[in-house]
Length: 331
Image (cartoon, rainbow, N blue to C red; front, side, top):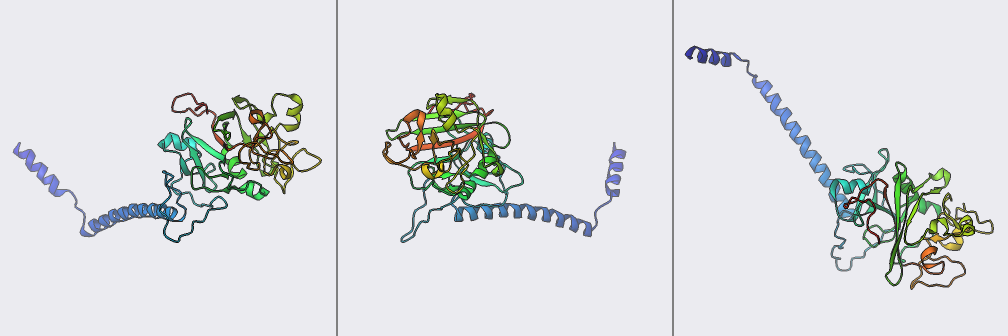
C-alpha cells in the first residue's frame, strides 16, 4: 500500500505543469470570453432601451406614461419603419403565442428571414395567436388612401384601440407560406357582435395587384366576401379573385367608374362590393350618401349601415388554441 502511494506521488510530481506564460494566456482567453458575453448583454439592453425611448412599443399594459407639463404628444401617421433582426424569432403571432403565451399587445415579427421585421398587434385572446391586419375603432384614421399607403401600411400603432392597415406587402409576406384562417370580427353601434371566418385566405404579390383568394366560409355574419346567397349578386360583387384597388390604382371590374373613388377606401372591389371594411366611417350606424361607401358588411347589417368596430386577423389554419379546438371564441 505504501509503495502504491509513493508511485502515485511520483506520477503527480512528474506530470507537466503549465508555464507562467501559458497560464497567463489561458486566463486572458477566459477573460475575453467573459467580456464577449457581457458585451452581448449590453448590446441587447441598449437596443431595448432605445426602442422604449423612441417608440414606446414594448409596454403591454396599454397604459400611457404620465404626460409632462406643456408636452405635446404626436400621433404617428404611418407604420414605424424598424430595421434589424436582433432578438426577433417569431414568424407570426401564433409562433409567439406557442413560445411565450404573452398577453395581447404590439410585437415584432419576421415572416421572411431575408427581410426586416415589422411591428404587429397580436390578439392573444379568442384562442390566441392572431395577427391583426386591419382594425377600425373610432374614425380617427383616414382610410381613403393611395396605393403606396395601402402597400406599405398606415395608421396608429401604440394602443390596443388604434386604427390601422398592416400593409399589403406585410400581409402577403405573412400569408405566403402555408394555409391561413381569416377571422373578421364585427360590432354595430348597439354593441352587438358578429363574425365571419374564411379558410385558406391569402393575397398575391404586387405584380398581381395583391389579388385576393380564400376558401370555405363559416360564421354568423353571412358570406359578404362572396356576395351573399344570390347568384346575380355574387357575379357582380364577389371579392374572390379580385385585385386590390385604390383611388389612384383602379383594378376593379366597374367600367363606368372607380369603385375605390366612390367607396372611399382601398379594397378588393368587383362591381363594386358586398363588403367594404375600409370604407368611410359614419357614426351612429345608418347613413345617407350618394354611394354605399360606409364600413359595410352587407349580409349582416346591409349596405346602408356603417359598422362601429371591425377587426381582420389571421393565423395558421392548423393552429390549435388553448382549448384544443383551433376555432377560438364565437364572438
